[in-house]
Structures are given as structure tokens and as C-alpha cells.
Image 1: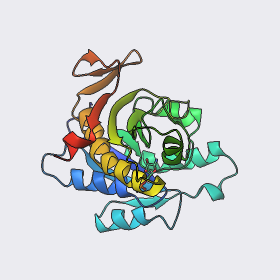
Image 2: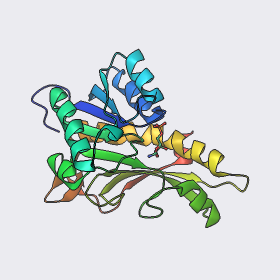
Image 3: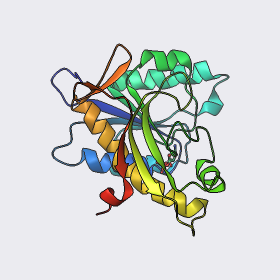
Image 4: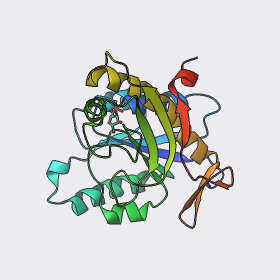
Length: 223
Ligand code: GRF
């Protein structure tokens, strides 16, 4: 990723607890981090992630969707805040609003989301319960580029976890989140350090077309 000779700047959009934001803060604080955190934006004033940003001395802003009549005007306000910080990469870390096509177009190839399922399986909500109901043996999370279509942009990295016979949605979600905290900053590291590029709509990893996302397995990650 070209960032004019400085570390690529990352903006993180949140709505809640911000445990993924924390994983980015921890990564950014390592000496060898290829990115710096520029700003945190929350659409909820009571999001605990704002407290995490404050502790890490990262500028933060609240842009409440309730203050705007429609999606376009809300997105314009988010864009306005982002422009103050000129981020190279935008991370949707549990940001529970759907962004408009015009917003996504402005940042094409520079917005990453984490989805709590092995996409294309289980787009949308309640993914953990749906995986349990379907008696899946494996579940997980996917880091993907954001496009106009919800949960459908090109996937880069997936974290795969086993579904245990004793699981309920809470225990399965906790296992998936542990993987999210590993693979989300990792995928951003690949992008910030120039390992991932989009050329003519095709995702390249280390210069080679990425036909399928890379899969990080639970056991490998927890050795
Ligand atoms: C994550 O589980 C993510 O998969 C989903 O929202 C949750 C956010 O959690 N999109 P946190 O705010 O990062 O703790």
C-alpha cells in the first residue's frame, strides 16, 4: 500500500465493545507494526470501544446515525470526519451500519470488514445460532473487502474453528472472536505492507491471484 513514505494510516469504525479495535491497538503498538491508527469513529456514544481509543490516545469521534435523516447524509458526515485524518485503510470492526454505495465507491479497495462466519456461508445476522442449527462441524470468521453488496466483497483471510457438541451461541461466538482478533490485524498487516493489492478487480497476494481466501486454522493458531 502506497502511503507517501509514511506508515499507512488506519481508521477504525465501531459500534460496540471494540474487542477487534483492541486487537488493532495492540498490533499498532508493536514496534514492527506496518500501520498506525489515525482515528476511531463510533455511531454510538456509549460504545466501550471509545474508552479503548481514549486509553490508547487515539482521536475518536461519535457520529450518531440518529442525527441524520438518511444513510447518504450519515455517510457524508463519516466521510467528513475521515477527511480530517486522510486514512489509507478503513476497518469496520463491529460497525453495525450498512454503508451507502457512494461511500464504498469513494474508498474502493480500502475498506475491510470482519464477518463472523465462513463466507459465503451465513451472510447477515445471527451467524453463530444459524451454524449451530445447521449442525455445522466448522464455523469461523472472514476478513473481506467491502463492496456495495453486503458481506460479498472479495475475501482475503478466514479463521476456522471447530463447533463443539457442548456449544451454544455464546461459547461458539467467543471461540470465533478469538480468531477474529488474530486474523483481522493480520489481514490489515498484509495490506499495509503491500502484500495484498487489487488489480483490475482481482485480489493479489504476494503478486499471485487469490482464488480463495487463506484459511487460518484454530489448532495452528492455538499451538
Ligand atoms: C464481531 O464479532 C464481528 O464479527 C461482528 O461484530 C462483532 C464486533 O465485536 N461484525 P467487537 O466490537 O469488535 O468486540
